[in-house]
Image (cartoon, rainbow, N blue to C red; front, top):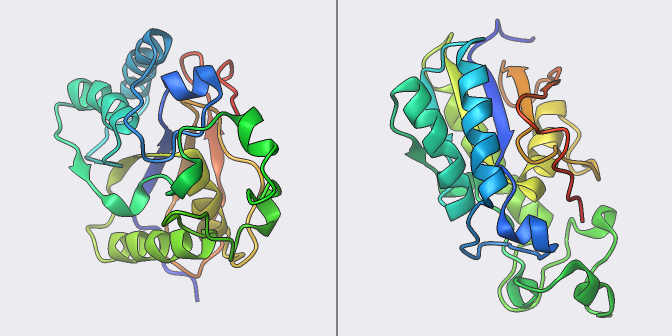
Length: 212
């Protein structure tokens, strides 16, 4: 049985980073936002504030996510909570490589659909490992206060698994993920339920498309 709606989640992929601009697999490296990414995050925060009152902000610990979150902290006068469980995939030896470089490596799994059990060399994470931490994150959200508007700042690959958790399709997951700065709105009712996801484009989020 589906529970009554709990929190409304606004999940945002961080704004354009230097790695996005240079088509680099950032993984967990400290790539900052570009100037355009900072300007867009600022504009998105201003526009979102006109539409909704955010009560909590939860951010990945990575630089590009924290920089994005800071604009929303300023807009809503909040301090972001940092949660490692929504960080980006650890790509092991492939982090910092360009999209073109990894396509030439036989050891790199080029098809996103085959990454459920693929563990990147050098201590990387498979998609199944990411799913475990994403499920843990959303399970904890179930235990929180109801009727909160929560902004969650995360990353591209994490979004693949987030979408699968929210759609209740694991171990199957989509190839697609949001544009930089795109927001997904979800009325969250709990892990194990199928949720409707609404895409919200503010600022210039339609323009920042850097899908590997």
